[in-house]
Image (cartoon, rainbow, N blue to C red; front, side, top):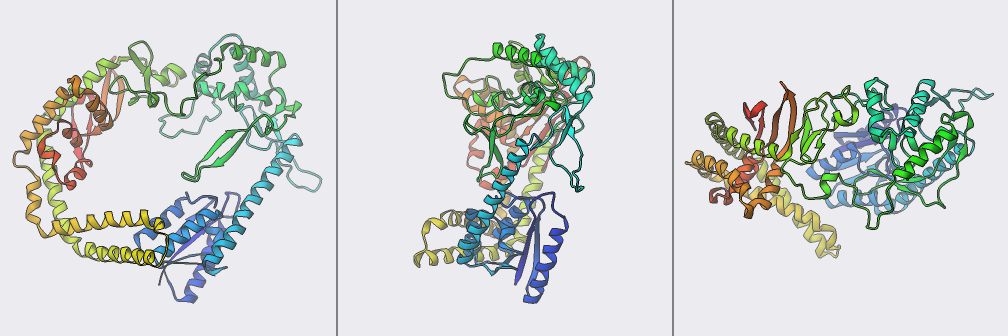
Length: 568
């Protein structure tokens, strides 16, 4: 029998050999049972509170593919400590006829799911409670229950028994001087943007300096949000009470979203928040300076909102974009977004907020002028003879490739179709025996969709001559007509609202880079799907295969929209 092994341990403080030990013990049992290991999935330093783990998601994908007869783990708590998740996993496996077994529990049954699932979930809850209690105790003793804020570092000390004393901190003099300077500048009337620009210009390392951010070209720099943070949560340098020798704790609670597995913070009520613990040896900011900052913050604070808070989405996502490229522009120098910097002009936010040492791109552009240039350049580039020839050539090559693939994959499609039919029959049998049909709704819908796809693929393989008809004999002329109509459709007031959103969806990004005192433009987005905007009857009635191929064709326009390349 084909067996997949799964192993996991919880935190990065555990020994990496835990994985190897679990694998060794599991493989001994697999060999003793005479099974054949066909896959191995691991999760290192991942909590069992959710199924959103890389190794577990890979296992679920393999289960769905139907290449496994047994899922084997060292114990049920390695798979999940959530009652809902372990029950869901068990039902998925049982539906596909896959055995769930562990070295400690043996073959897992519904009784194991009920009893051990409850025990494991309770153990996870108890561990969480004990951890929180220990942190509360550490906080009450005046020690640090979490990470170190800017201006502090961990202090190493040992007790009389030679054991490490946890939660000790000490001031970092260089960083403390920066903190005091930030408070003094803010109290003197400087804005957070002006302060961060000064710090970046002088090369002062930021709290995250040396850690490149996701999607950033350069290392992390000071930003206004580093200073202001969130006053309600007590985050940000200007709101950290530890700087006046008071250590806060318990202002917010973290809970995991069961749908995404991501952790979210929730502000505790006043009665749930813990009191401040004195930490006089960690004071950095004098009381008078702290009060001056609080007075200025109160003066600049906005009044209470009369309407419900807006959803936590980016600014441009909260309203209908006024311009075609709103929210899609980035700076080619630093990677920051291009956003409004005047009544009608947009500029690099990295240069505006972090200063010239971060980005020296100070060129701005009118948004309406940029929209017009992009549309004009797009049409010009797409109508070039070599572009049209490349499109037709690649389309023909891909059509032939799909035709050949449909013939060579016929045996696999036939085998999969037989398996899908069997799974549908098993589900129907279970329903007739009294199993709740609601348990099979999603699975039957997936199987039905896959069955239709397989039948269509087999039918296409039997009529290879029809594949040639997908390439319209007059496609070159149709292509030119569609591209020409693209701008006309955008300018037509009756069609503008509909075309506006569709064109925006096809443009992934516009990169603006200074060159010779002017901004050059690089447009990234889908090409072939743009041709559908003018609604030609030839493409409106095109088979699904044609639409799926079109989505794979990408266009990247270089400086001035000059060389255009196509790839599949």
